[in-house]
Length: 149
View 1: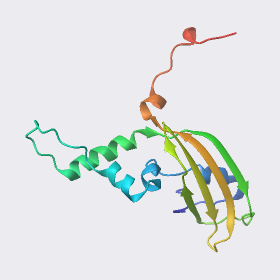
View 2: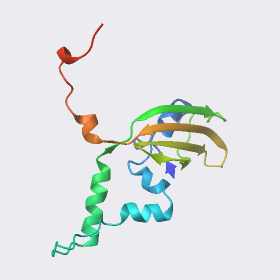
View 3: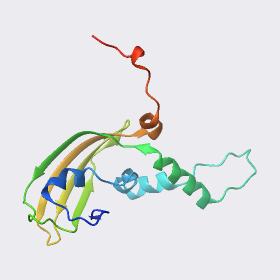
């Protein structure tokens, strides 16, 4: 996937950590095998008792909206810079993401970053959680209920 900054600014060396930690909210569907991806996108089976027919497209849209409510906080991020970007930066960087495992609410992510000429710029490894967005947006408990020393 190619990445540029929405602001139109050029990507500099200082922005590399941001670049490798920016990936689509539904990245897990891209990392899955074609069979697993089809299962993720397939509407759930209909009840035999339910006589109402639902459109597959509407159901797929609903499931996509559910995935949009996911939060993927990074727990560990390692960044190994291989080549310095020009001091003025670059407009685009190519990122390739792969995962070895997505399991039990966690996933790992290996990212290769290349410049427009194909030169390897950086390698990154992540460990991230898969949580509901409500976990991120929930109001925090009052300070009286927090543990303190």
